[in-house]
Image 1 (cartoon, helix red, strand yellow):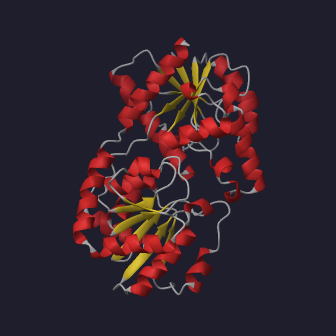
Image 2: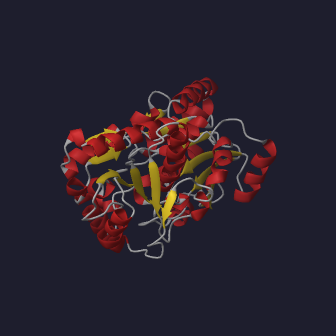
Length: 379
């Protein structure tokens, strides 16, 4: 069986989708080297594809269209032609726009990470909302099976896209073994210098866009500082600027937090474990997540977590995090203060978080994904 994979999202700078693509492909190739020897993978490269991840890979590459960046042209013309030329049996789109529009020949599987443009339309520009909504809208006709990372997204796909529940498979993401609590002191010190990290900090990791709710996080942190001043405590916001970004620097100034908040910008994927491990707490007050991989990564690094009780985040966190209403700065501040001042609570969440994160593996993701391929091919 030949499996085609759209490689345009094979880059960590895309965020969670890129991380998913990289980890899934690695896990699929590792799995098929041990079993499932009848599977062959063909990665359809694009200008965005980070080829460093393909060096030495056992997967074949379709490089015919590597210079075509347009998603529409790729989906409408190039992927259908490529899938036929490469004799693809099952084509897997790793995001909502990554499957052939027509004439695909074989079967299609698509991973939908979320339907945020339909749930939170205000969080996107009109053009971006239209593009994503159009791509999501054709999934019902194009894909034999839809993979989603959580039950929350499964419910949204049924509700907003009218896909039958029996065509949806929930496969939670895994947590890379690189995220663990035991770092090297010399490397940790180097990362502190590189990103100008303070000694004591609360951490947020994510693209800076409205749904990540950084505004509420800043307001909550201002409450924490005002209620009981913390010696040298900082808030570190790690992530690149996304669409619809607000002027967070001006917000920091207005809240009187100039000396207490640091923006690192985008953090290289290889550096993230050390950035997590150095934090006192990890706070992730997102308004909507299809999965919320940073929550697991922080837990795997032994950092106590506070996150939202919305969408998929309670599924991911279980009882291993404090869950708060992300629209209430006072509630978020209270949770942060509780963890800062209660060592026993921090240790309890640390232990639960480590156990929770260990249950999510990319090997399990790969096994379940291969099962989807086989089911679709038989159908």
